Length: 257
Ligand SMILES: NC(=O)c1ccc[n+]([C@@H]2O[C@H](COP(=O)([O-])OP(=O)(O)OC[C@H]3O[C@@H](n4cnc5c(N)ncnc54)[C@H](O)[C@@H]3O)[C@@H](O)[C@H]2O)c1
Image (cartoon, rainbow, N blue to C red; front, side, top):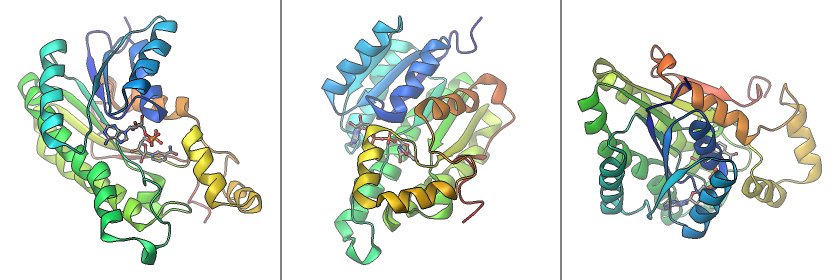
């Protein structure tokens, strides 16, 4: 018996990056996993990678800045899977908007809030009725080390948006705890996906990168697999007494700066 047998999970913006790693992990542990992404080529590559590993991922293409598209995709998921046990609100990112606050425009703020906060709120709103009806649910929101302690390479808009997700978690945990639903925030430090590698290379010199690594107690950045393992715990049935929590997964970074 694998710990996700019989469970259905939805992971947003999971055609690549951390979300895809989470999807593979939960599928390997027995979940029926649906991934959403706006990029069909990435979804196709994700399905192929899963098939090569002997796994199946269901997928749906949508742009999550469109609220109606989120509602329609949730309805499709529920129709096809018949249930929703796990929601990982993974969509987010700094969208590589300017690092310095005074260089950020209203549009930069709006775009970042839209994907990091609004899309997650809409998805959670669409997901909760099925979880309430079942009397069971696990919601994990992606915060960030940035939202907890500030960032060395993403700006104030991203930091504020991730902080908002952490606060949102607290209220969902309180309001829906009596219905069997938990809600937690996972806050990764820099995880070396190809995209983050490129961003760090653009925004930090080699010397700066070495200096930052020296402040991380484990002396390295994190891996997608490590984030996926943390999700697999927080979204599991056995984490039922953990709610409203913030789990840092950052190698101890920020204890020392
Ligand atoms: N990578 C890190 O180091 C890191 C660190 C801390 C927190 N996080 C958080 O983890 C989450 C995942 O990060 P990542 O680096 O894997 O993400 P990413 O930027 O690599 O994006 C993952 C996917 O999101 C999809 N996407 C983007 N906009 C979309 C939209 N409007 N609709 C649908 N799909 C869309 C992309 O096509 C892509 O496949 C984010 O919330 C991010 O803020 C990441």
